[in-house]
Length: 225
Image (tube, rainbow, N blue to C red; front, side):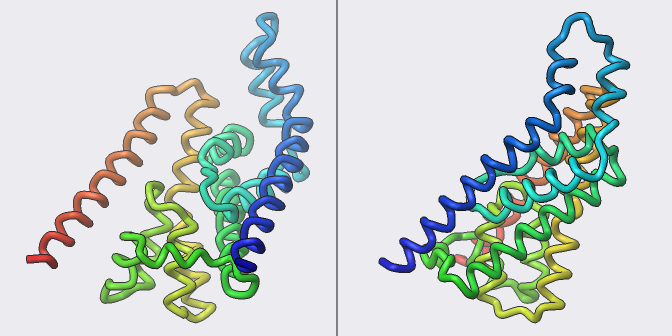
């Protein structure tokens, strides 16, 4: 009961921090929003404004992604695309990777030291699949790559495997790169008005997700037989 109370308290604090940092982000991007909604403003003016953000906005975005990644059940995809809009594919990917990696590391630290671990996830099919793999650390890495698998589930699996610090950090860093790059490139595509390209990028994620689910189900049926 006490552990559940601590877990719920930490989640509540995380949500409050997300709201606070999200409001700071709104203040940072308020001129951009006004230009976007202003029928008198030109697209070039908005494009110039959206790319004018510096270190402060990058810090806020990184912090927000970290918090959203650490709190279970909150997707970071929209913020990742905003990062791509503002900073382009290269710097945007760096910001996304940093935020996602820090968020997952924070989540694992909380699980290990502050009773944040939800033991009901032991029976989760993805946790079982990762733990049964011949090389579980590769399973953890793949888990971070697939958007359909909640990062909290992958973090639980990583914590239960007792990986070394080096293995854990490498799995997180390599694992979050594909989605971070994808969101940054999606934002860059939207910046240039390439909506079809952005849709193709989103579709590729969905296809990857479906393939992973199909492979997982096929493998489970094979094991049952």
